[in-house]
Length: 270
Image (cartoon, rainbow, N blue to C red; front, side):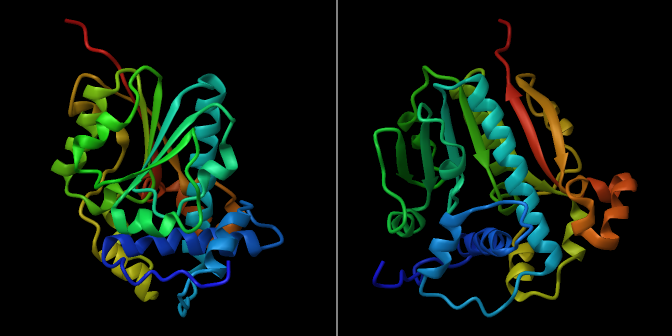
């Protein structure tokens, strides 16, 4: 790539796509990195953007842990449902499809038009990998996704920026339109707002958080068709990398601060 790619068009919440990108880049550069993501390295090195602030060490392990967890869940889903659909909600510059593609899945990357425009500089659509330039709250996107296959929906670093009513509307749109589908997403508890306040980019991202949840199990109360599978807690992963913070996993309230929630939607009996 001869010319650097500008990101001037993205501001506010969409700009937070740089945080996980930076985390994957830094983790890949480590000799003992938890993940290996050459595509993120390629993207960072070809963006017209100077990363003046280093990601806090604990922020980097969070990005690595959540990437590892979501990759594992997605791979397991694709192993059990090889000819399925995966929908990456608020995809930003996510690179997961490069790591987990099984050659059969139909994969949809959905985000705002300004984010998809940048994404198109680094990724190409194929007969199986498609881009949808829409807001996740523009529910016309449900008609762009085939409904004759089992589907997995991924929302990495997305729901935190919506109010609870918006999260409910997204979850219910999936539940109503895609029976027998699954959803994995990142979630935080309110205690997270008190941490990582030294890095301006991270602090600004956290200041935009609107929705918090202690455990995904509470979401079963939203609708009888929502079934909780599991919470995956970041701090359970790679304890040595957490340093002194690894001891927080023995305190239930603190262990639940950062997690991936896995839900499934089950048909309701008439």
